[in-house]
Length: 115
Image (tube, rainbow, N blue to C red):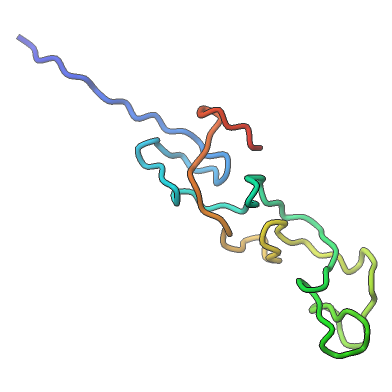
C-alpha cells in the first residue's frame, strides 16, 4: 500500500517594490528594501529643483542660497539649469543609492495596487 502525503507547493510572487521573487513563508517586516515614501508611494528618481535646507544654505551670508553644486561665482536663485535628478523620497542624487525604506514584500496577488 502506498503512503499518501501532502506536498506543499510554495509559489513565488514578484514584489512590486523591489522586483524580487519571494514566498509568503519568507516575507517579514524587513524583507523588502526599496525607495519609497512613508505614505506607501514609490520613490521616483526624477528632476527636482534645488531647495534651501536640502541643497543649499545661507552660510556665506550673501543673501543668496548657496547650492552645493554651484561655484562661488555662479549662484542663481532659480532656473531649470539648476535642477538635478534625485530620489523624491530621500533626496539622494545617486540613482544607485541604497534603498531608504524597509517593509514587507507586496504583490498584485495579495491585492496591492501600489504602482
